[in-house]
Amino acid sequence: PRGNGATQNGGANDQGTVFKYSSATHTLSTLATFAGANGRNPQAAPVLDSGGNLYGTTAGGGVGDAGILYTIPSAGGVLTTLATFAPSARSGSYGRVVIGDGGDLYGTTVAGGVQGGGTLFRYHQGVLSTIAEFASPINPPLKGFSPQAGVVLGSAGTIYGTCTEGGTFLGGTIFEYAPSLP
Image 1 (cartoon, rainbow, N blue to C red):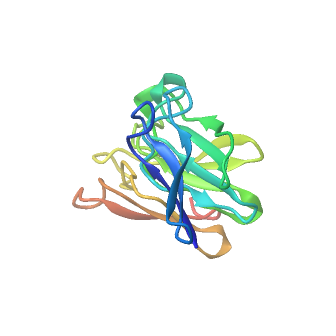
Image 2: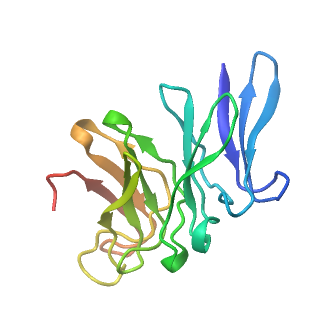
């Protein structure tokens, strides 16, 4: 067995790394080091697809220090920036992405969007798009604000997650997004 992960700091530039661990050989290998332009400070472990590629996000780096969506082969190789998050409000992503049907990636940004409360994004065939925005914690509708954890994918493509702010008592929310929901 082996595991893959990311460090928030460390590496040659102290801006984080992507690593793999082999329990068979008890070795830890650095797959990539972040340096700002290619992202910095990943907050969550990358996910592994069926083809052996890792996908993850960073909280900063890239254009406007807004964070990136990246991929790297789990066996090692070149870290590739798939997309840069919107530089307004330094949106960044703190949560783990999920892989949906057809290889689409879904995740959240902690800030950004019209009201600055964060976004739910989809990466499909080379295009990063916002599929939902989170509302201000003090303005209805109280959908939530500042999603920081990863999302999970339910049946029929429904996405679930949490926000650290918003809701009736402003203490956070659990959200559900499905293509048929408003």
